[in-house]
Image 1: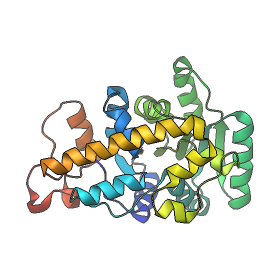
Image 2: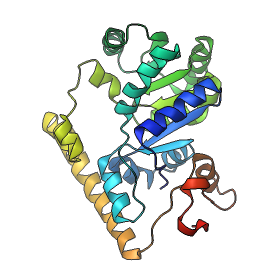
Image 3: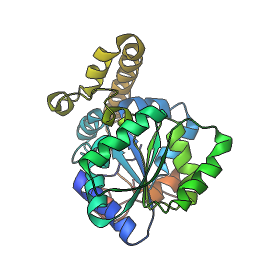
Image 4: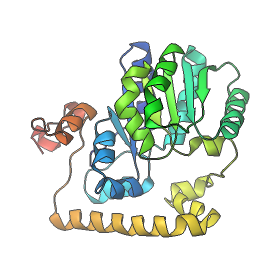
Length: 271
Protein backbone atom coordinates (compact mmCIF):
# COMPACT_ATOMS: atom_id res chain seq x y z
CA UNK A 1 0.00 0.00 0.00
CA UNK A 2 1.17 3.51 -0.81
CA UNK A 3 0.30 6.55 1.29
CA UNK A 4 1.30 10.17 0.68
CA UNK A 5 3.05 11.73 3.73
CA UNK A 6 0.96 14.91 3.77
CA UNK A 7 -0.55 16.99 6.56
CA UNK A 8 -4.08 18.29 6.21
CA UNK A 9 -2.75 21.81 5.52
CA UNK A 10 -0.50 20.50 2.77
CA UNK A 11 -3.39 18.57 1.26
CA UNK A 12 -5.64 21.62 1.28
CA UNK A 13 -2.90 23.64 -0.42
CA UNK A 14 -2.54 20.91 -3.05
CA UNK A 15 -6.28 20.98 -3.73
CA UNK A 16 -6.48 24.77 -3.91
CA UNK A 17 -3.61 24.74 -6.38
CA UNK A 18 -5.39 22.09 -8.45
CA UNK A 19 -8.45 24.33 -8.80
CA UNK A 20 -6.52 27.54 -9.41
CA UNK A 21 -4.22 25.97 -12.01
CA UNK A 22 -6.89 23.68 -13.51
CA UNK A 23 -4.76 20.61 -12.82
CA UNK A 24 -7.18 17.90 -11.63
CA UNK A 25 -6.43 15.79 -8.57
CA UNK A 26 -8.26 12.71 -7.29
CA UNK A 27 -8.06 11.80 -3.61
CA UNK A 28 -8.19 8.32 -2.11
CA UNK A 29 -8.16 7.44 1.58
CA UNK A 30 -7.05 4.40 3.56
CA UNK A 31 -8.08 2.99 6.90
CA UNK A 32 -7.54 -0.42 8.44
CA UNK A 33 -10.78 -1.92 7.14
CA UNK A 34 -10.21 -0.74 3.59
CA UNK A 35 -6.64 -2.03 3.52
CA UNK A 36 -7.91 -5.47 4.52
CA UNK A 37 -10.61 -5.34 1.83
CA UNK A 38 -8.13 -4.22 -0.82
CA UNK A 39 -6.14 -7.42 -0.41
CA UNK A 40 -9.10 -9.40 -1.76
CA UNK A 41 -10.78 -6.83 -4.01
CA UNK A 42 -8.45 -6.05 -6.92
CA UNK A 43 -10.83 -3.45 -8.39
CA UNK A 44 -10.91 -1.53 -5.11
CA UNK A 45 -7.14 -1.80 -4.74
CA UNK A 46 -6.48 -0.47 -8.23
CA UNK A 47 -9.04 2.31 -7.87
CA UNK A 48 -7.61 3.61 -4.57
CA UNK A 49 -3.93 3.32 -5.43
CA UNK A 50 -4.33 4.97 -8.82
CA UNK A 51 -5.60 8.18 -7.20
CA UNK A 52 -3.29 11.18 -7.43
CA UNK A 53 -3.20 11.49 -3.63
CA UNK A 54 -3.76 8.68 -1.11
CA UNK A 55 -4.17 9.72 2.52
CA UNK A 56 -4.26 8.03 5.92
CA UNK A 57 -7.91 8.33 6.87
CA UNK A 58 -7.49 6.06 9.90
CA UNK A 59 -5.29 6.64 12.94
CA UNK A 60 -4.32 2.96 12.82
CA UNK A 61 -2.61 3.59 9.47
CA UNK A 62 -0.55 6.39 11.04
CA UNK A 63 0.45 4.13 13.94
CA UNK A 64 1.38 1.33 11.55
CA UNK A 65 3.54 3.69 9.50
CA UNK A 66 5.53 4.60 12.61
CA UNK A 67 6.10 0.97 13.57
CA UNK A 68 7.20 0.24 9.98
CA UNK A 69 9.73 3.12 10.11
CA UNK A 70 8.03 5.20 7.40
CA UNK A 71 6.13 7.60 9.68
CA UNK A 72 3.25 9.62 8.30
CA UNK A 73 2.91 13.13 9.75
CA UNK A 74 -0.74 12.85 10.78
CA UNK A 75 -4.13 11.42 10.06
CA UNK A 76 -6.08 13.21 7.32
CA UNK A 77 -9.68 12.06 7.76
CA UNK A 78 -12.01 12.50 4.81
CA UNK A 79 -14.53 14.53 6.79
CA UNK A 80 -11.79 16.81 8.19
CA UNK A 81 -10.37 17.43 4.72
CA UNK A 82 -13.80 18.28 3.35
CA UNK A 83 -14.47 20.70 6.20
CA UNK A 84 -11.06 22.31 5.63
CA UNK A 85 -11.67 22.70 1.90
CA UNK A 86 -15.14 24.25 2.16
CA UNK A 87 -14.08 27.57 3.77
CA UNK A 88 -11.38 27.88 1.11
CA UNK A 89 -14.01 27.26 -1.56
CA UNK A 90 -16.28 29.86 0.03
CA UNK A 91 -13.48 32.43 0.19
CA UNK A 92 -12.25 31.82 -3.35
CA UNK A 93 -15.61 31.32 -5.05
CA UNK A 94 -14.91 27.70 -6.00
CA UNK A 95 -18.01 25.78 -7.04
CA UNK A 96 -18.92 22.65 -5.06
CA UNK A 97 -20.96 19.63 -6.11
CA UNK A 98 -22.29 17.16 -3.52
CA UNK A 99 -23.27 13.60 -4.44
CA UNK A 100 -24.37 10.99 -1.94
CA UNK A 101 -26.73 9.80 0.82
CA UNK A 102 -30.52 9.64 0.69
CA UNK A 103 -32.26 12.73 -0.66
CA UNK A 104 -33.64 13.82 2.72
CA UNK A 105 -30.21 13.41 4.35
CA UNK A 106 -28.57 15.27 1.49
CA UNK A 107 -31.04 18.15 1.82
CA UNK A 108 -30.31 18.48 5.55
CA UNK A 109 -26.57 18.35 4.91
CA UNK A 110 -26.77 21.07 2.24
CA UNK A 111 -28.76 23.27 4.63
CA UNK A 112 -26.14 22.70 7.34
CA UNK A 113 -23.27 23.61 5.01
CA UNK A 114 -25.00 26.81 3.94
CA UNK A 115 -25.55 27.66 7.60
CA UNK A 116 -21.82 27.24 8.28
CA UNK A 117 -20.64 28.74 4.99
CA UNK A 118 -23.34 31.16 3.80
CA UNK A 119 -21.40 32.35 0.76
CA UNK A 120 -20.48 28.85 -0.43
CA UNK A 121 -21.39 28.28 -4.07
CA UNK A 122 -23.09 24.90 -4.37
CA UNK A 123 -23.12 24.12 -8.06
CA UNK A 124 -25.42 21.13 -7.63
CA UNK A 125 -26.27 18.03 -5.65
CA UNK A 126 -27.86 14.62 -6.08
CA UNK A 127 -28.53 11.58 -3.94
CA UNK A 128 -26.11 8.64 -3.95
CA UNK A 129 -28.40 5.91 -5.25
CA UNK A 130 -27.72 5.11 -8.88
CA UNK A 131 -26.72 2.21 -11.09
CA UNK A 132 -23.48 1.86 -13.01
CA UNK A 133 -25.46 2.45 -16.21
CA UNK A 134 -26.48 5.90 -14.91
CA UNK A 135 -22.92 6.96 -14.03
CA UNK A 136 -22.03 8.51 -17.44
CA UNK A 137 -25.10 10.77 -17.38
CA UNK A 138 -24.35 11.76 -13.78
CA UNK A 139 -20.77 12.65 -14.75
CA UNK A 140 -22.14 14.79 -17.59
CA UNK A 141 -24.57 16.47 -15.19
CA UNK A 142 -21.68 17.37 -12.89
CA UNK A 143 -19.66 18.70 -15.83
CA UNK A 144 -22.59 20.92 -16.88
CA UNK A 145 -22.69 22.37 -13.35
CA UNK A 146 -19.09 23.62 -13.81
CA UNK A 147 -18.17 22.29 -10.38
CA UNK A 148 -14.59 22.80 -9.18
CA UNK A 149 -14.81 20.37 -6.25
CA UNK A 150 -16.80 17.14 -6.17
CA UNK A 151 -17.47 15.39 -2.86
CA UNK A 152 -18.83 11.85 -3.12
CA UNK A 153 -20.64 10.60 -0.04
CA UNK A 154 -21.32 6.96 -0.96
CA UNK A 155 -19.87 3.74 0.41
CA UNK A 156 -16.92 1.68 -0.80
CA UNK A 157 -16.19 0.41 -3.38
CA UNK A 158 -18.82 2.42 -5.25
CA UNK A 159 -17.22 5.80 -4.62
CA UNK A 160 -13.70 4.62 -5.50
CA UNK A 161 -14.90 3.06 -8.75
CA UNK A 162 -16.79 6.23 -9.68
CA UNK A 163 -13.66 8.28 -9.06
CA UNK A 164 -11.56 5.92 -11.16
CA UNK A 165 -13.98 5.68 -14.07
CA UNK A 166 -15.69 9.06 -14.23
CA UNK A 167 -13.67 11.72 -12.36
CA UNK A 168 -12.13 13.08 -15.56
CA UNK A 169 -15.50 13.25 -17.29
CA UNK A 170 -17.02 15.34 -14.47
CA UNK A 171 -14.61 18.18 -15.18
CA UNK A 172 -14.12 18.75 -11.43
CA UNK A 173 -10.59 19.73 -10.45
CA UNK A 174 -10.76 18.02 -7.03
CA UNK A 175 -12.66 14.74 -6.62
CA UNK A 176 -12.82 13.39 -3.09
CA UNK A 177 -14.75 10.35 -1.84
CA UNK A 178 -15.89 11.12 1.71
CA UNK A 179 -17.95 8.04 2.58
CA UNK A 180 -20.36 8.59 5.47
CA UNK A 181 -19.47 12.27 5.95
CA UNK A 182 -22.85 13.45 4.63
CA UNK A 183 -24.66 11.44 7.32
CA UNK A 184 -22.52 13.05 10.01
CA UNK A 185 -23.01 16.60 8.74
CA UNK A 186 -26.76 16.03 8.40
CA UNK A 187 -26.96 14.89 12.02
CA UNK A 188 -27.97 11.38 11.00
CA UNK A 189 -24.91 9.85 12.65
CA UNK A 190 -22.91 11.22 15.59
CA UNK A 191 -19.16 11.53 15.13
CA UNK A 192 -16.91 10.46 17.97
CA UNK A 193 -15.67 13.22 20.31
CA UNK A 194 -12.16 14.56 19.67
CA UNK A 195 -10.64 12.49 22.49
CA UNK A 196 -11.80 9.26 20.84
CA UNK A 197 -10.46 10.45 17.47
CA UNK A 198 -7.04 11.35 18.87
CA UNK A 199 -6.68 7.98 20.55
CA UNK A 200 -7.58 6.05 17.41
CA UNK A 201 -10.80 4.53 18.74
CA UNK A 202 -13.34 6.43 16.65
CA UNK A 203 -14.30 3.03 15.21
CA UNK A 204 -15.22 1.83 18.71
CA UNK A 205 -17.52 4.82 19.18
CA UNK A 206 -19.33 3.79 16.01
CA UNK A 207 -19.55 0.19 17.17
CA UNK A 208 -21.16 1.33 20.43
CA UNK A 209 -23.83 3.10 18.37
CA UNK A 210 -24.54 0.09 16.10
CA UNK A 211 -23.01 -2.95 17.83
CA UNK A 212 -24.84 -5.69 15.95
CA UNK A 213 -24.18 -4.28 12.50
CA UNK A 214 -20.67 -2.88 12.94
CA UNK A 215 -19.20 -4.97 15.78
CA UNK A 216 -18.29 -8.14 13.87
CA UNK A 217 -17.02 -6.14 10.88
CA UNK A 218 -14.69 -3.84 12.83
CA UNK A 219 -13.27 -6.47 15.18
CA UNK A 220 -12.59 -8.83 12.26
CA UNK A 221 -10.89 -6.24 10.04
CA UNK A 222 -8.93 -4.66 12.91
CA UNK A 223 -7.51 -8.04 13.88
CA UNK A 224 -6.62 -8.78 10.25
CA UNK A 225 -4.90 -5.40 9.97
CA UNK A 226 -2.82 -6.06 13.10
CA UNK A 227 -1.71 -9.37 11.57
CA UNK A 228 -0.67 -7.62 8.34
CA UNK A 229 1.39 -5.05 10.23
CA UNK A 230 3.00 -7.80 12.33
CA UNK A 231 4.03 -9.64 9.16
CA UNK A 232 5.67 -6.51 7.78
CA UNK A 233 7.52 -6.01 11.06
CA UNK A 234 8.84 -9.57 10.91
CA UNK A 235 10.05 -8.98 7.37
CA UNK A 236 12.02 -6.05 8.73
CA UNK A 237 11.74 -3.84 5.69
CA UNK A 238 10.06 -0.42 5.50
CA UNK A 239 7.65 0.29 2.68
CA UNK A 240 8.32 3.54 0.83
CA UNK A 241 5.85 6.29 0.22
CA UNK A 242 5.05 7.09 -3.38
CA UNK A 243 3.15 9.49 -5.61
CA UNK A 244 -0.25 8.72 -7.09
CA UNK A 245 0.89 8.60 -10.69
CA UNK A 246 3.79 6.27 -9.93
CA UNK A 247 1.57 4.12 -7.72
CA UNK A 248 -0.97 3.77 -10.51
CA UNK A 249 1.72 2.55 -12.89
CA UNK A 250 2.87 -0.02 -10.35
CA UNK A 251 -0.66 -1.27 -9.72
CA UNK A 252 -1.26 -1.71 -13.43
CA UNK A 253 2.13 -3.32 -13.97
CA UNK A 254 3.65 -0.56 -16.07
CA UNK A 255 7.33 -0.27 -15.29
CA UNK A 256 9.23 0.13 -12.04
CA UNK A 257 7.90 2.20 -9.17
CA UNK A 258 10.22 5.09 -8.37
CA UNK A 259 8.95 7.65 -5.83
CA UNK A 260 9.89 11.22 -6.60
CA UNK A 261 11.20 14.22 -4.70
CA UNK A 262 10.65 14.39 -0.96
CA UNK A 263 8.74 11.12 -1.08
CA UNK A 264 11.83 9.22 -2.25
CA UNK A 265 13.12 6.63 0.23
CA UNK A 266 16.21 7.46 2.34
CA UNK A 267 19.32 7.72 0.19
CA UNK A 268 17.32 8.38 -2.96
CA UNK A 269 17.39 4.77 -4.14
CA UNK A 270 14.62 2.61 -5.49
CA UNK A 271 12.36 0.66 -3.11
